[in-house]
Image 1 (cartoon, helix red, strand yellow):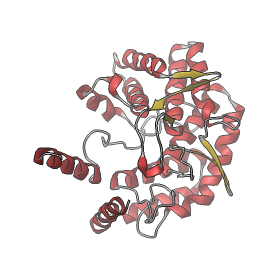
Image 2 (cartoon, rainbow, N blue to C red; image 1 turned 180 degrees about the vertical axis):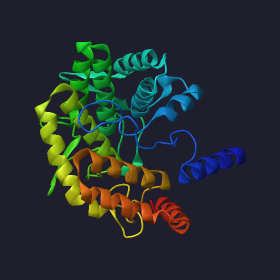
Image 3 (cartoon, helix red, strand yellow; image 1 turned 30 degrees about the vertical axis):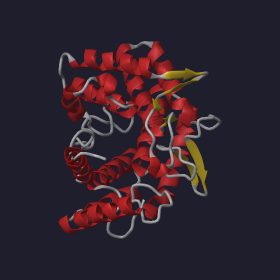
Image 4 (cartoon, rainbow, N blue to C red; image 1 turned 90 degrees about the horizontal axis):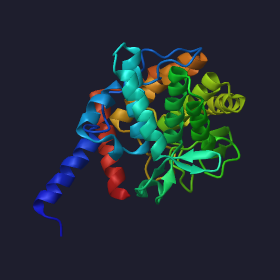
Length: 302
């Protein structure tokens, strides 16, 4: 039986998670240095990750968290901080060492189960693969080292057609890279968009036509399917067939808005920009409370 202190600690952790507070929920606004014609800044500003990382060893971070730490240091480099580039490249080295090579692919495995989507370890994530690729593309451009370009290609390979990883699923509207490769497609929205950005970085930064083709095809699929993530007053986190809609926590609802705004600028898609503005209008205190309450019921039923 759990102790009273253990139960209180669990309750505090659950509340912090529901309210999107604590480690992992650092501010993540749109990037200020990203460009629409060339690889420069990242699309989301992860600089806050570099400050939070002082509380934990980088080795303890899960794969996407480590890639985001690197991208945060990259933003600090672009902002003109003298020591940031060296720290960025050091993080890239660590990210490389954490990868598991399988043929032409380099994979980052998660060793924790995710009952929500029926995942058992080890499993890989299209989000982590794409953010690793985005990190290595920037390392290649900054250092000129071809090995970083090769690492980026190997990192993105598991979400390309023909990979045995299961990270790319086909829907009636087109292909979707999966953040969580569940038995029934989960189609997690933020992970899908992060994966698109990894494809764009490899396509533009390294000239990969295969990545460009998949980026364009999956972006059209996103534009066709985005309405399915709108419940009329809030956004869905995923389309996994749970008993209740898998609503986004307030943190992820805001991230969805920022991601769609960036995508609208990146591909000149006014429809995605309009969705971002509509979802921004959903962000009222009563609706945030309603979303948190629904998430509590969602967890209780699950």
